[in-house]
Length: 475
Image (cartoon, rainbow, N blue to C red; front, side):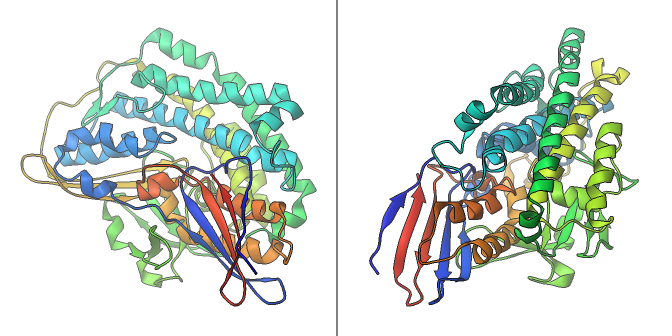
């Protein structure tokens, strides 16, 4: 069998550079499939020597998709370095920006990235299985989806001056107060945003009902779950302690995020640059866990906004209150979180402190070390900075959301390949399902490896004798 290269359009709907290798058996079934994250990780190293207060502007450059998450996690770490906790109004404003980020990111993922698979079909012609195809199928819905993302981005813009890479959070607070007109402008779009998310939820639930068989066999497996939680075990995206639960839903740990290294270690495999975090007490791979929307809704017992909580009750009833293990339900959970974030915007804007000018703590009690943790759209994001007495960074550790999910993404790729890929004639729709397994986690591989450059994905199909049968690439 000779080597053959086939280019498939459109460009894969993930952010980052990845490669999948599929090892085939003689009978045309899959022996094993590997997800290779083959970008080089170097961002932590070249931050050394910078001042800690520069990190809020440097680290968002890791990624143009979720710069707000890095901006805010960095600010929280720098608060601790400076020994300067922000005043309450500043924390409210940071959370407001974060909610804008959650809405725009989750909305974009469901409607523009996952949507073509769900709404047009995994086997649809790649020429139309994209945003253009969505416009052709339902122009009104597509416009609403774009407007939803625009509203979330406008929150970021009003607070930080830019929709991407904002300048807002600084050690000890924020650099700009919210004006009455800005508050009212954001409020004017809340109801429409909620309606659009609810339309998305209706679409997702209808799709799930019609595709129940696929949901039950598409990358369903057991892991632990991990993320921030409120004191009352409610969904938390900005603050709080970390809660870790077992495969059957029992609490394993509840701890201050600053002590994360007491609980998490990272495993290395020779086929990926991206590390594999795991829970130390259970070892690897017994201690692997998932983060992000599915993980957060598995560790939570309720949501503190009414509309999202009603959806949450229906969602958790799917598995009688036990952890939901189905990879495709990431999309359902993502929309519930978007609904919570939109409702939370309204709660924050109704708080009298949101317009306060008490937005910066100028007192310093320098510590030289800080850990900032936030729930990015893709999961728990950890920034850990150590400095010298002058405030220069001497060490940086970043555990990014996608990194936590590395084992799960790898398992999903293997599971879906074994379920759907059949040789010798490997169809494009079979391979698209593998990519859909990766997309369900909404990975940001540039974040997780801090890479620069083009972001294609390719699939190598290897014959039983080890020869390369076929390469299918998206570039």
